[in-house]
Image (cartoon, rainbow, N blue to C red; front, top):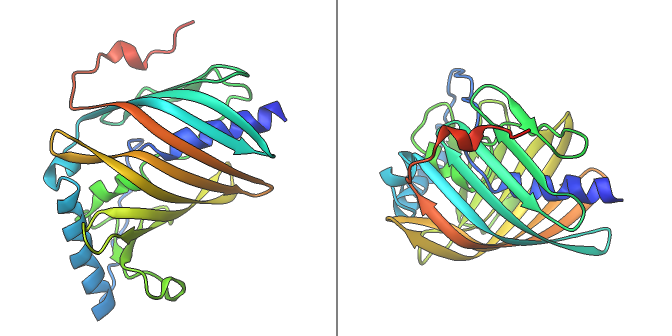
Length: 244
């Protein structure tokens, strides 16, 4: 039970994040239908609503706050801190069971967590893949037919993972999204509803949101609340070193 809850906590925090190992560069296959062209136009509008080029050129991001995880009918309170700089990232999670730290130093992923979980590349799904809008290796298409009546678009990563973004017609900001991904060969999905954004240096970063994870036999519900958000600060390389 404890290891399963820890697994969910790690996945929960990491799915919020964005930067990771560079994606391969296969030939892009953008859609040519009128619906796909309209989706690309909408995506450009959404990118502008979240900071435009500032989001695409984001150099570093630090987020910290609290997260409540509910899995197997048990609520687990935790706090988190995330630091991203280019391809590097660091995640620290404090919870009642076992503090967890995971680092990608630009070459390898290191963790002190139980079971040495290795996560998939973190720039393939989720909110921050919006920064890939305009990158032809992340083609944009119309939402699938199952999303009838919803305003939004799909971004597909080179490895096939995708995120369906749903857009607020008034603000043109993302109000939620659904993603599909693989974790250690096991498929999973996640859905997010964003309740509140915070403006920081011309960017709009999710501050409060609810997230659901379906990971095979595990379904978890998480409520995130960021307390501190900082963008484009100088990050020392020491941050991405695993202490002994």
